[in-house]
Image 1 (cartoon, rainbow, N blue to C red):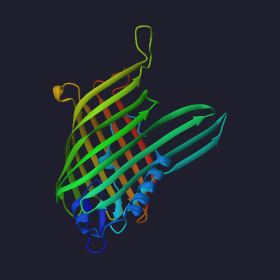
Image 2: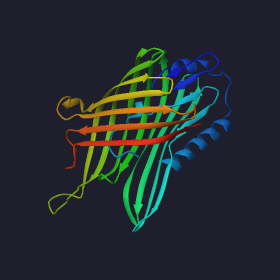
Image 3: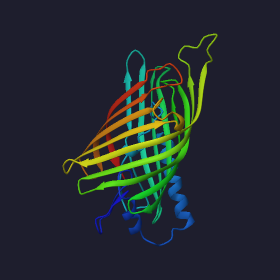
Image 4: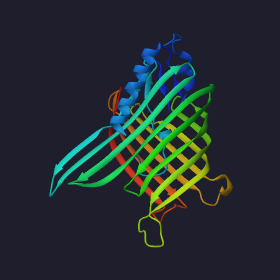
Length: 295
């Protein structure tokens, strides 16, 4: 998903025209040493940052702007807070969205988020995810990408979730102020949850292994020169129960760009699981406002 403006080329990896930027990249070959250096830097940033609190990621909303002259780019949203109350309260949160341009038709995208808080010696919130995509351009408006991701959300009782699959994305609308994409895919999902109230007749953990389908629709609107709205709707279910036990998701991001590299982002996420494998709330909502730093 890439946008080109002649000499000044801008890439929107998650919401846009990946082909144009990839076709504009220099053709010179990167040596192995340079490529390994970029990969090490990429993984180093991710290990420092690592979370979502649910079993669904809104990767379509995690957008960034990339200068095509740079092989490695991304953005970070770090938050560090410390308070002295009855006990010390420490909060660490960071989101990383990093991209490595390999050649004219291939992009590696890694997304990572981590958050936890401690109250004295007690862990209050713990969760995270790591998402990896390998994008391959087939047409100016069509791409496919295998992906793999790992999630954990101990505050909700999800010990971990692992999923991997293949998705495709097609650009439906491409104007100066708006972009729309539809994505379909098939993936395998494994979940391990801790039962909220186990007893003698209830095991401590519940497990789920299933093949699921994915359908999403994303829309990005440039409201003004500095304001941008990005929305995504997701529908996931097992192929053998299309309308029986689905999982729905909705996301909205409102971004205000203070400078080309610094902005404020407000996010909202809603996930509704019609059939959770343990007795937890079927709906999950999050809201967040953060400072976004691009590099």
